[in-house]
Length: 232
Image (tube, rainbow, N blue to C red; front, top):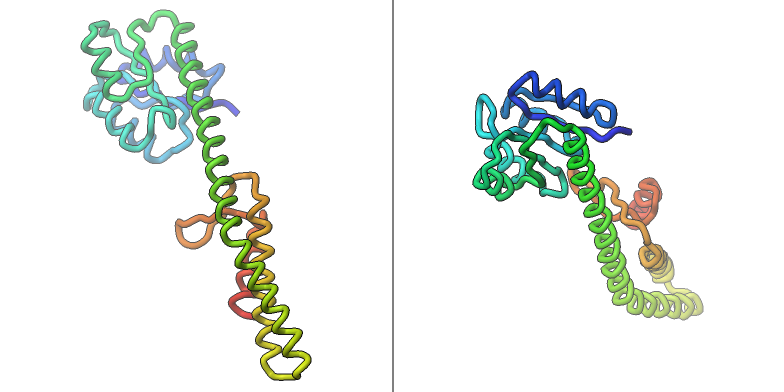
């Protein structure tokens, strides 16, 4: 699937230049002013990169960029400024506002394509490292939780098993309740064991807009376990 680029450029002739240069390799949307560009960004989260002219007919391109940076980091959504202004002050202002790159000459489209590829590769490299670090933290957190929970859980299960055997010998009515409690504890133990073997970072919808770590791989199984605990 082609990566998607949003071009925010006020001049129609330049829009056509960018489309001609990019369409072979990317999906391209064009916005003729800053307001339209922000509308596209707010209604579509699939853009991989933005090409932005700092000089737009309705507002400053740098204001558009600053707004983008309140939502996306440089690595979430790279932005390349495209301007004929070659003054150092303009370049510094653009980079300080959050641009990943600044291209001052638009004549050679090969340079533009190269800059785009570099920005996209940097984005993917960062996202790969971030995913790796998230997985590492997740595994370490789960490992610590399992370590601290498993021992008392095992001790509780063992103690309940002893109580069940003793009560069965005496024939008292507490046995069914102990068996039910033992069943719950064993299910908790199985979930802890399953949690300790999680190697992939995946979440499922829990309630509303909240998500939880998926340790059962299937939401149905997780719901069945919860229902059996709440309604034995």
